[in-house]
Image (cartoon, rainbow, N blue to C red; front, top):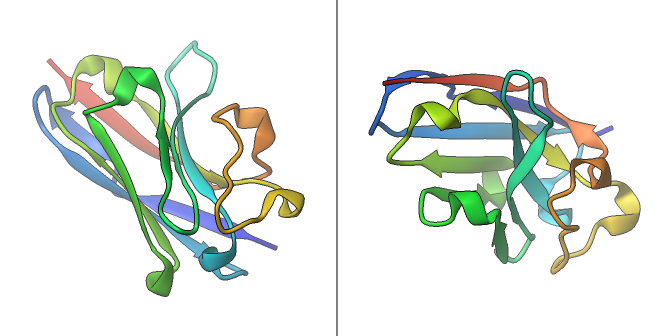
Length: 129
């Protein structure tokens, strides 16, 4: 069973930066795509970025240039660097992995949350103006 645990969230002021981490256990991260999602209060969960085993990335249009996804397969860890934060970035941030039938070195599903099966508990990010 794949387990994911996020960390690194917190409270920051507008213009600040954070780096979120997601440690994966139960299976080596080097076999599957992983992604970051967020859910703001009263809104649906949305995908923000994903990264394949070999480093291919995909970003939601709304975060391009602001968010950077990366992974360290040796540490079984996924990262999300966020810069120039605004209150609109306030949300619970989740990392997730797709079901096993999508595991491939070069493939990630699109950023639809329903295409991901394994989820962490989330880390809260709050940005104040």
